[in-house]
Structure formats: C-alpha cells, structure tokens
Picture 1: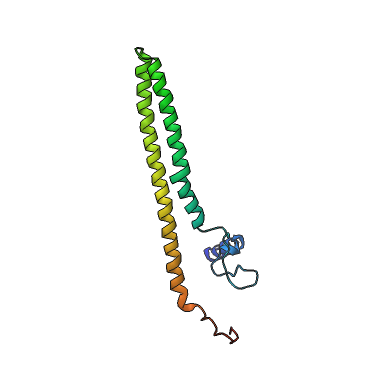
Picture 2: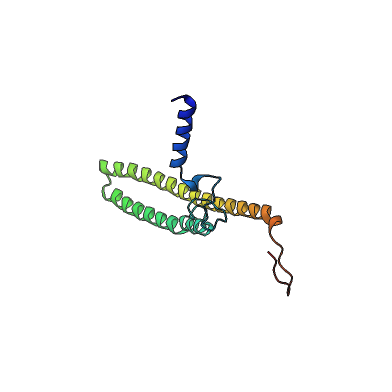
Length: 150
C-alpha cells in the first residue's frame, strides 16, 4: 500500500471515530436548525456568584471571626492559668501564630469575595456587549395591530 492509499484509509478511520457533535460543520440540533453539541450547563450564573460573594463577605467572615475570638479567649485563659511555667510562653507563641493565620484567612476571604463580585460584574458587562453587538440583527417589534412577519 502506498502513502496516498494509507493516508486516505487513516483519514477515513479518523472521520468514522469523530463525534459529529464536535464537528463545526455539523448541525447538532435535532430539528436541523443548527446549534452546538456542548452541554447546556456551560456558562456563568451571576446570581450564584452574588450569593457566594455575599456569604464569604458576611456569614463565613463573621463565623471565622467568632471562632477566632473564642479561641483567643480560651488561649488567654490557659496562658493565665499556666503563668510562670514554660507552657505559658509556648501558648503565647501558639496564640501569635493563630492570630496571624486568622488574619491571613480573613484577608483571603475578603479577596475571594471581592473577586467573585468583580467576575460577576465582568460577565454581566460581557453579556451586555454581546447582546448590543447582535441588536442590529434582531427583528424589530411589530407595530400594534400588525401581524408579526417571519
């Protein structure tokens, strides 16, 4: 078998293995009206981003601060109870480390909350730009009393 025959056979086999939904030149919609073969859940849900951003900036932040305060109170009580012992110095080091970790976590939560809100605004802006780009292609609304045309 020569190169041309082998190449033709390989191309035929590759074409047979392709998923038609992944080919750009195929109509994937069952009614033949075009469309793609991707899943319907691809996209961005701005309401979910808003909810997540609010929870990170509100509920999660509040609960984290509350847990940190409770741990600080209990650690302070333990430091007082062990005053004069080496354990008190060790607990003080643990307290300092804990406080730094809590600050880092709260900073990270604030950053994530801000980034979700910014991403939400960015997607909304992109959606508006795309809509406005297609606006000239939309059919004008029919006048009252006039049947819509196709």
